Image (cartoon, rainbow, N blue to C red; front, top):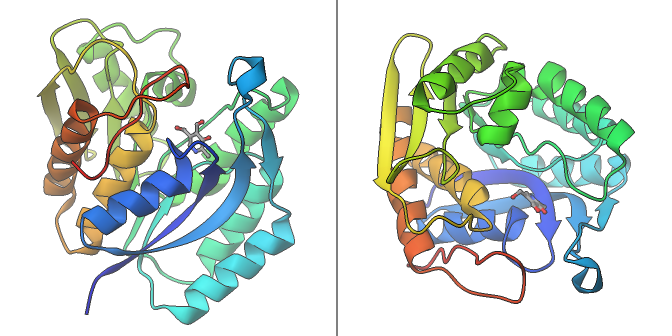
Length: 263
Ligand code: PXL
């Protein structure tokens, strides 16, 4: 039978991020995806594509988790945007209902359009209630700075320090992503397993950020883990997948191009 993977994430109405990207990625990598919706993000075309954010009520998230985990024997889950402390609470409770072979956390922190006051509560709740249960966490540069408490991350050595500090918060593996923002010709990610640092590199494809790259990478890691691949190899599979998807990017009227998961 086909391998299954579960995603708990937000819906993003333009199709370039969130659970839409997760499900496309899982499907492309031959894994049957099941999704629980935590929030609905509808970028506003008349307001510079700013975020409009609607959290799904906690009891409806609990119902979805109940339905998904009752319908299927799931052991690998990817967590994307949660968005509020209430959502984090209900997802943490839902996860605690069973054992997971892998919990992949894309620690989506702030979303423009959310109240700044609420964002700090959300960051703290994520750090306390979800991060310690993650087997793999995939912070980008901004998230790595926030989670590590570092003022700046300017090069790969800094990114390694950040990955070590984030590892101290509880996850088994940290994949800290340099992306296009660190100087150099390569997009470098740091994989830290608590002992060894591995650098995962790919040539940069242009110097512009592409929407959905983070969701695609974490979902591809999840797909590879679902099929029994070890973490180090899963990260490499995902890096190759996202690099091909960025090369074949889809342009849109939004500020950034978006990854094509079918490449
Ligand atoms: O790429 C981060 C992200 C994840 N999930 C949802 C989003 C975004 C960014 O906008 O809207 C639902």
